[in-house]
View (spheres, rainbow over the protein chains, first blue to last red):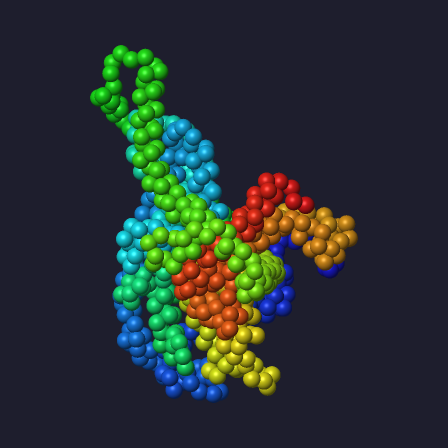
Length: 288
Length: 323
């Protein structure tokens, strides 16, 4: 360790430099590469002609740039339609889910009802039901409702929100009670209290819940796959299955082009809203 | 979460209008009763749609599965045929299903243990705050927010023994790449690698948050007492992280049990059933063999297993002190 020295003023940058041994930077770079290389490999392959993909030694630095893989992907499967489907179910699904979570959370935080505590436990209990276990019966229920192969059939089972309700209720209860009391004394009705006081004070929490809903709905795989049965109703992640060959050699350029289309929207969202997403998924440490 | 900027509160300047339907002379209890009734109605309006959806699409499946598991049904016949506990005896006597359970155990423990171990190492690395740490943290977390099917597609290409990165990596050692996803010995390890790659960033960030919550004085005190780095790690940091480890173990077990999209995209449960876990088994029996009763029995089993896991969490997370 360092010999004891007289304290002297040092800049924070200097502290950081002194505390960072070279090996941490090396290991950190290697970790970065572990996550970067697959992304690089996907992205370059999406724009490589087949002659660059199917060669040995492997071609790490693409020489020619082409959009052909994207047009082939659109020719192999209706990716435009998949995109529309994903956008529709994600926007409607997330909007309704978040609105319902807000309403439910408001009711549980500020309104009275006999047996409210038990009802809230009932909502929390839903967190313990694993989604995979519900598939079979939900398929039968949606079939009985005549909603197989429809947007409503894709969206409906995921609308009930236990996680969002819980998160928002906790947040609503943490709002300053004086504000709510003042609003009540001023005669603001519940609707006005919700829109003028509660929501403006809860924007980060609502954004977090909304982003998680969007990510979940966009990436959802097994349920939309089960409940739809025509190509026209599939969503983006399931669309990738159409690009994969069941036998013989895969057309990697086309598959990577499709993959780029699936991941780019969520990566952009992550880039711009990283703080909320990380806080929501990891920071609040509440399981979904 | 903290509120970063609360908007200014606007006070009403005009007095609130009297409620028109409010009668002039009423007792206090009558007013309260009326207000309560109004509040109940609003509560029902706001909360019941969500609660009905939760009841129908989360709770009913649990009960429905139990009923369905006592029947034999191909999802086409007008009514399921009641057969008692036959599906369960079939499950527990079917050697294939015992293989599935064994494989699920291997899959879940490998994914959970390795993700947690590697995630902890990453968290320590990130906590050193070397230049570039925020960027690497974001990169490590990003696979968590993208579709599992897309992650699977990328890795399917990487694992291609002829034109994937795997060939180049193995060529460095002068050997051929294994045929990862088409070789029954390599398919499950391949899936485990991908699952860890997708999930380790999440584990690392949760651990990092916990690490940053440990007061620095405690480590300093241990150091002054002459503890070595290893001793500090073993006897100071690990015990303080144990609630986080516990939480992560439970949530990772629950998600590994249900993992489906990686398997669907990369191996389809094959080759020769070598990647058929419980979640794939349920799908295969229910939606490919149309043996709904049998699939329901397997679903009930999965529910019971995960309920036990959650029960352990509820039982122990109530204790405030874990060390």
